Length: 94
Image (cartoon, rainbow, N blue to C red; front, side, top):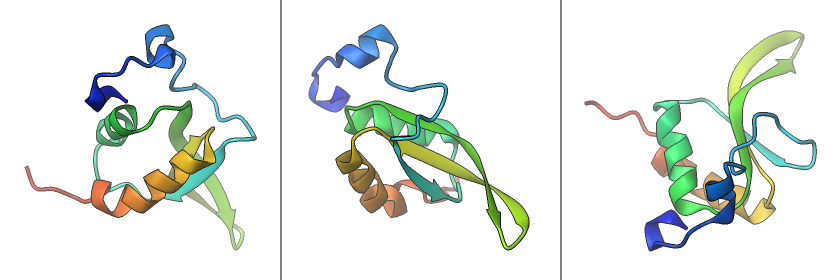
């Protein structure tokens, strides 16, 4: 993890954040209240595995909804992110 001074080979090779969401990744949907960069930076600092972050179009009751989605290759990391989401995704006055 970056905050403990450990070098992650996926970061060095630029393979940590994927430009697409593979089907085996565990997806988490949420409404964003902070800047996208804040979420991505938190993932880089606190987790280790590969992830995808972006917009996701969901269809509910015949209508389309655009939400944010983050997906993790390691399912344990999705649990850590989901448990921390209420502390990360808080609107802050600046």
